[in-house]
Image (cartoon, rainbow, N blue to C red; front, side, top):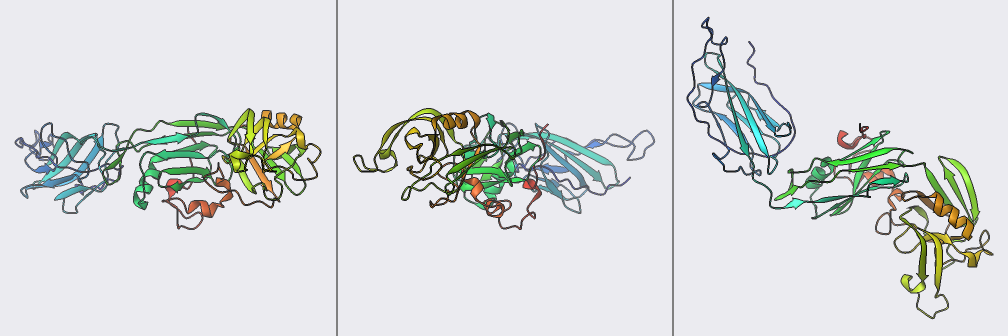
Length: 417
């Protein structure tokens, strides 16, 4: 019989210690061979560094199992939590000690199964349970957007309740926030700031995709005295690939569905001094009616540029006030000149059609404008204005790696079933 120690690699959690009491029993089967009988109780031969009784183990300390007395060696240790997840660990070559190589989860119950072998080769075993102390500080995560159907440009967002600054801690968060799509795509998280992450694929989401976001952070140590809490899972779907391209040079907007042109409309964009931002934007919301005032974008009341207008069929693309909307007052300039204060204006009929056709998450791209480029973050979803290598730099797992050479955790999203 081969008693070579086995090494287990499993999921992460944290560490502790316990003493095992009880006398070892005799061994040997009816034929007297030491390996033919039931494993003896190895309580006197191993110790565990977890507290006794109802005391809770400190999840910040590693778990250790030690062979006592020199008359037996450890051949295997398996540690699992209530969900069946294993705690990774390593057994010394001489069988004298096993220690965990991953942190324990806080507020969790573990079962430890230890296998031993005495000097005669007889097998022993010991099983015991312990619990870890609950956390005092949870990291809450709010996933977005809300469940529903979106356009193919919609990023996934994660808002954290506490700042996470260290790269190692950020990597724990990224590993714990699982994004799976069907069809599968390549994608990763990007840290916008210490409390905000966005997830996007390399390219837009596939049309008619199903995207599931879940978390394995509950109880997992993120950083110093900070542990993950429960996270409500999220499911969204995408519709057709809807893209609108507004060309400030030709004064027309072309709308495509799944790569095929479905409508071209005359438009007007921002005039000099108020030029529309270039770049890719994502539909944020739709408002059938909104009152637009120049004072809301810094134009002084009573100045030659001031305005106060009732606007219909307004599709918002930036938080600072860029919309695609009905502008019946500028129909004479649509298709020939840029006269707006930054929005894309069109006839009421065309604006109503656009309003009814697009949904949140659809793409609106502005080209050939004299305006600044769309910010990647902070004024809506400008995520797609970063190329893939730039986007990867914002990941704690993939940042600094060459394209395609990052860890497998984020290399490809598997379909969710």
